[in-house]
Image 1 (cartoon, chains in turn brown, blue):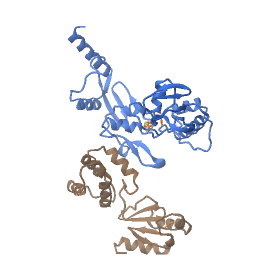
Image 2 (cartoon, each protein chain N blue to C red):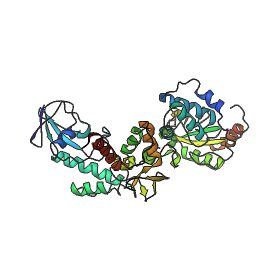
Image 3 (cartoon, rainbow over the protein chains, first blue to last red):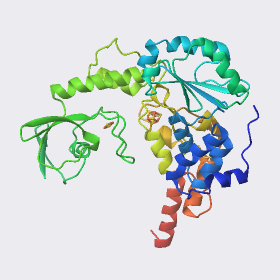
Image 4 (cartoon, each protein chain N blue to C red):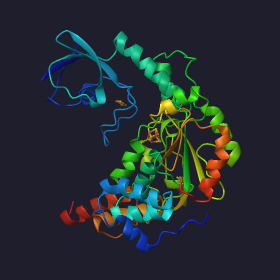
Length: 160
Length: 246
Ligand code: SF4
Ligand code: FES
Ligand code: FES
């Protein structure tokens, strides 16, 4: 996957809404994550300069929050629930199925940059167990048979 | 205000930290994460003592406990010793290579607890003193990275940091010697980066890294010093002596 380099204009656009103050660090990094699917190193350095704070402080935040990632995430983010209810209803099988289909484990991204896999705890929809969420869309009572279809449609960029 | 520590009457100001009062009165309380220049960490809990106010006893953390009313303090009671042993045992499993912790364990007769898995090769207890020292110098080259069991102090991306000036303050404040500094006559290596040392023009001893001398110069608005700390003091004294003719 081509990782977009972050230009000066991009950076200005990212920080335009935020004054140069440390307390906006998290907000800007969230925007950065949304736009680039990760926190690029040059983005981190530019932000440190903009907020007048050490890079180490931002890096520390970026490694603390799960919502931020220092490695590029895929275009589609698959969250598999392994909360108690989903676990009992076979989330492990579901996870194994996804791992086999995509060739990646939790916290990994496919080489083509299409999918990232995350293992999460209860998503609050236990009645639908086992649950998986892809790009914010909930899939309940997921079966192994339905997986190829879902992934193919996502790959083709079709609306789900 | 009057308090007693282990039966000894001590005078203190309201709000003074208990540890400071004890030390002033030569009463030893063990500490790890406390540093006089960077107070307030309060995270290792080795410095716990028991405080009795109106007949009620409580365990408190002496380095961050402000004395606010008259009380009787016990630094060596059964409750203190028992809890301190557990604290030390936990710290020992976290940082089994830390000599200072092992010495404290011996001193306080900490038994082996097999239930605590130990982190082999580790010296750091994540007290954060090093990070605070670096921040207070205005460099901020290191910070706590990751979280949970993976938390560690490091530079961004574990790479040599442009912010680091190689002053070694982090290593100097570390209670457990967890930060590696390698130094020879001409260079110093710390946090994966190598620094050239400037040699004192007077005595020929290392005066510090170029970067740290430049940082100090920027702060004071003077030229980077060509002398080491000792010789600088001597130079000032000589100048005074010349001026006042003593
Ligand atoms: S390296 Fe030393 S000073 Fe820094 S957190 Fe670890 S134990 Fe504390
Ligand atoms: S356990 Fe999976 S949604 Fe609650
Ligand atoms: S010295 Fe008081 S908590 Fe560490």
